Length: 152
Image 1: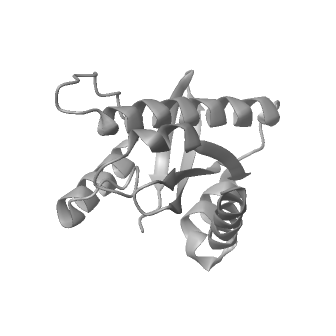
Image 2 (image 1 turned 90 degrees about the vertical axis):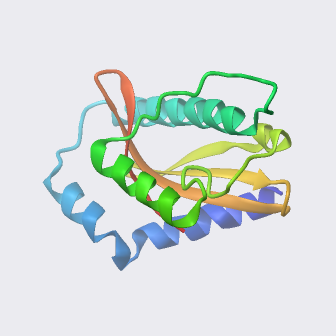
């Protein structure tokens, strides 16, 4: 499992570093580095992990359980992108699946890749495969904001 997760994160890093990230590259060239970025990177990573655990737990809940749906920390453009993907595929791009198995909850990991990009990875126990979801996220006014998510 560690090998699959490491390989998935490595592949994600290669994809993000490729030419398909023109939007990120253009945005990054205009941004100035902030002081204490190591601290903010860890803060974003932890916030993403908390959100993904809560969201996946909500998706995995059975019909007789009624957990509250966590607020989606998506900016307007990312919200539209996610809604369009849901309508077209009937799947959830936030977890890259239609449902989520509770046994996968402890396998959720978030790793910082580069800049504002993070890799959310988990073991999909239904297919016994590692799922890696690249997202761009920041903290705005102390709140997590996902500003982009790559679609499969």
